[in-house]
Image (cartoon, rainbow over all chains, first blue to last red; front, side):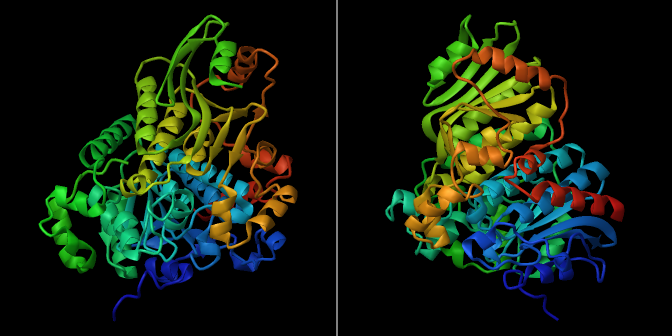
Length: 299
Length: 244
């Protein structure tokens, strides 16, 4: 039986299918109806889990804490309750000190209807990620959902010990429409989907060292990826931060003058860079692992 | 207040803070004799990959200097730089790296204090001011999550509706008071008094090494800007601990 598409699956399906059978236990589930206290001001519908599922379960018989965003509710955006659930989970992981955290990102960023609460939630989550990592806990992220991983979600992902991304996963701070609104269509045409994918999509992120694993768009592939990144998670210490500093400075030196991702891929040595976006999963992985910028991705 | 006036009030005996390309870095000595490392973004500069990498380099230089100097982060920035180049090269990684460097420094003997004296927004705000342990502000500071035109585009609500709601809804509206209500700003300083004195008072509360609990959600509850966050986070933490 083929594994379901990660992109198409709901957050609950991803959690259920990723973990060992019947091992998931949710904290503050939808039956508790802890909804957003702010959405009604905008006459917007609420969801009983506020678009965030947190709990614990088993992956290959080993305990993990897991969090999943529902990209189909408010674009998976971080609101007050949504964000606080993840903050609490990360603080528990820090206190326990041994159970890894897996975050299934699917988010447009801060929920603008409760923007200040969402912005603060991101700040608290990032601090809690760092605290957990300093306590020796791997915090890993999976990106391959409909909403991508934008805004504060992108910053949170960048704080994780390791990341897995699929072709469909987009990681970025400003979304295409926000760049276009602020800088004009000449800077970024948000309707040009090919441009969006090659600038922010999973293939580009994997090639330049923005993600550690390239996953296929299936739950099974993301499960394998999660297992791998938990095992290979970087410790957060001065050495890692200095290595990341060098890695990021070198990226600017090498590719800072490139006008387009195609130019980056060409200068990496891709013989036919135009063909990368259309390339099938196995072919791309084989090519990418020959080209890839940094094998040890310090983050 | 202008950056030069802030530095003069903090360091009446002079300082070695330079501003280059809109980024500040250096150090100064407070009247009490304690040293302070300084980084900053001035003149409403957008924070892109180049700026974030330079700021992070300064933070790592402090962390490896062998001192125990606190780090003051001065912020008058735009949002993150919105461009194809910055996103193509992975701006999320650069901003996250800067935030990690600041939080790591805080955990290793360099308490971090933010001072918001102008504008800031979105990802630039998260990676600088909001990555410090204690965030202070001066009157007139203008933090925002997103400019209203972009908000209008993303939420599909007319800008007039957003402007109207901004007057009555602190949880979404830009501005220092609204952000302070959510617990994001610890205190607003008095520009008519010595900033050095006020900063020294804050420094005595953050002395010592190691990370202290992040209490911004509790502050947001007390100030009634975030009614649920502190309780939800604590309930999840307790349930998770009980499940182990």
